[in-house]
Image 1 (cartoon, rainbow, N blue to C red):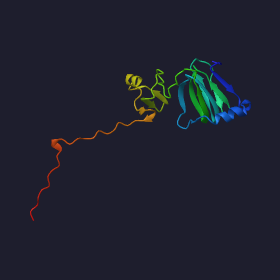
Image 2 (tube, rainbow, N blue to C red):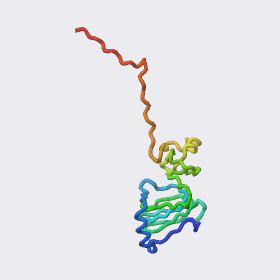
Image 3 (cartoon, rainbow, N blue to C red):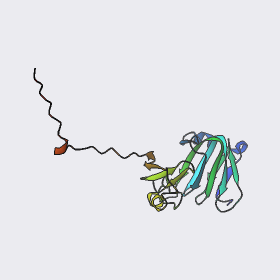
Image 4 (cartoon, rainbow, N blue to C red):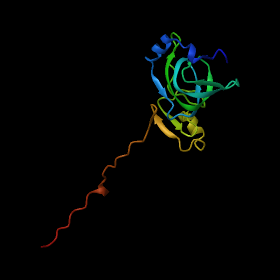
Length: 175
């Protein structure tokens, strides 16, 4: 497990790394408290605020990361995140040469790419692919249906007027 995550203490993070990190996207744990994650490519992080406990799925000891640290998650690291203090971080994903970009949303059950369509289970903070959802609808009851990571609401079906739905004729009243 030691080779799958590298943590540089805040007092050892270089000024150059901090400057480079400012050009990376920012992530905020505002809506995420607990979730599993499978790193399919190297991810480099500079933690701006907060802390988290990471429980590796291989049974290794829990790892704590916190404000100011430089963290590198190596390809193959799998863990369950538990945000212990709201976290904000800069991050970048480093793909191996010739490798395809990892999906932004992967099923937390079977690891399949489910960006196009998924079900988000808020209580467990899990993303579930349509196949896994169909296999256990009862377990995932109440999950939010999403497409491209955004809540999906089926468009309302418009009624077409049939001959039975012709507007009623107005009655002529006698004066």
